[in-house]
Image 1 (cartoon, rainbow, N blue to C red):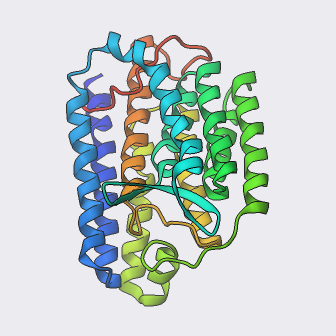
Image 2 (image 1 turned 45 degrees about the horizontal axis):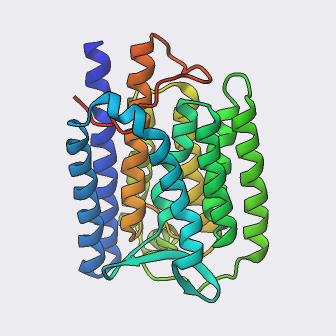
Amino acid sequence: MREAKRRESYAPVAACLAVLSGCLLLVLLGAPMRMIIINLAALGIALAAMMCARAVPSSLVRRAAPGLLLGAAALVPLTAWIGASTQGISRWMVIGGITLQPTMMVCPALVLAIARRRSWIEAGAVMIAAAGTALQPDPAAAAMLIAGLLALLSVGRPDKPTGLAASTCAVAFASGFFRSIPLPPVPFVEGALAGSWADGWLTTAVAVLTLVLLFAPALFAGAALGVARAFVALWASAILASVAGAFPTPILGFGGSAVLGYLLSVGVMIASSRASALAGSTEAPAGSARSDYLRFVWS
């Protein structure tokens, strides 16, 4: 158990190093200092939230988890209705002069939540978020949801909630793909990976290091195979989407929302590992009653 906890502590360390490596890449690419400061501030906020979460009683988390999940998922369609719009596309909310992208913040955590506990509440949250990606439209976010759910379904026996959620995400992706209008790429936000390859061997090496560190938490968190696969698949999908089109490059490019969403997904993965260990299971059973999603800090 002590060895497992020690190894688990490497997961958030790797996540922090990934963000720091991404900031270094931005420096080498000549990004404005404001972008680097915002990414670092998002990292600091995420770490502070992890520390604060230690004081939350498990019983309170279990009672509040369903409402928190559904509320977080509702941010996605809410953004489509009241968010900032560009050429008919509404993927961002502006709060106090700060632009946030809720899909990048909440969608990864929602996928890992259903990976931990395959119930209709978690599936409903994913379907609400999927509907929001169709309304925005944001096919890249819908692709993240699909990739994570398909990776989850590849392990163990398929279940109805996850299957229906995956089908809903597929419809949302198709709708968003055909309705989405290509937007002009924003420097250092979209195309950061391709830009690193074109800039020279040093930026290419830092980009490769960042990618390795980005996926490394899946090796250390000690989560069940389905959860780890879902984590890798959803973030790999986001990276591939940024190469295929004008979509944000998470961690390697500018985007505080991606940093927050990434650290949150690492935390949910760690929480899943701990809950499975407490239940005496290496693979979380379908319909497990444990909803310990916010207890995602390391000891």
